[in-house]
Length: 419
Ligand code: HAM
Image: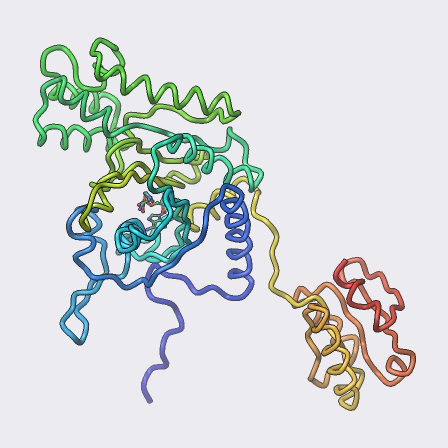
């Protein structure tokens, strides 16, 4: 006989048993409700995309090292989406004449990246994407407001996380003012990106190589001696001040937030948990004005961000904000004997019409064991349905957590269980 098949999922991906799926869906329900409050509408697309979509302007690291790409039976190169932004840009470009701009859209796709699985990073995750396309008016502010709105909807406080902002325009104009070539600018941004992973002295030493004249780009920004660079920096500071005036106190300027994608053109930002338990970015995004026009036509202003379920659940767990969720039915209808099954089914039918979820017991255990099973399944209420119940058209409804029991008529049962 051959070895039995292994039951573990593929490396870096998860199975969601009903309880875990219910928990994730309740987190997403909260996210959906919050985003709708801001006028955002949900869209979706297939996880399969033509491979070229990622090869022109996303991220070298993602394309070369992290995509799942294969050739299909018709010789087409196909990629499992590693992110949603290129798909979104494609969808917008395809209907740019029909859509009513600005678009406020969100989506919760599963995305795939061949990464080393570790805390906060897997090979498949669900990623909430929130994007505002077709206007620049107040767009940066709106993004920060959304980040904060989503976090606050879970009861998170400003001290629990920090929103680190920077700007590609600022960094590029500072690099230009210092006299860095394009290649040097790329290296410099790479150095900033690695800053938090190296000893402080080493970082300072490496910075010197980029100091043409007196200063490297970062020193130039902070010195405030160059008009163009200052104007860019001022606009970031003013964004921080506006957020503060709206009661969002945890936005800071952080020149080490560079972001890996090539398509960003302006503001870039990342959200981090302040608890060192969760060191990976919780959210990330920025402005990407050139992506839609890759498909032809004029450029369309676009800005957005995304956050994954893995890091969000870690954050909510660490800070004790994870909502309770259950996929269990409302009511367990017990059957004293096999003959009572039709009675229980008839009552269940009535209750389901009143939108009460019901599980009817079909086994052979005694009532005591049925009650135990109902508890184990996480069901809130139990009632047994036998001949005498049918005659009186009432049941003894038991609330399993408190143990409380009350006699309730069939007609009042739905309202009682729902409350
Ligand atoms: P990103 O920074 O690559 O941005 O990903 C955004 C978020 O997705 C991360 O902050 C993290 O929460 C989650 N995430 C990313 N990779 C993984 C992984 N391997 N495992 C678990 N979670 C992960 C983007 O993808 C941009 N497309 C976001 C965007 C939308 N920019 C504009 N609009």
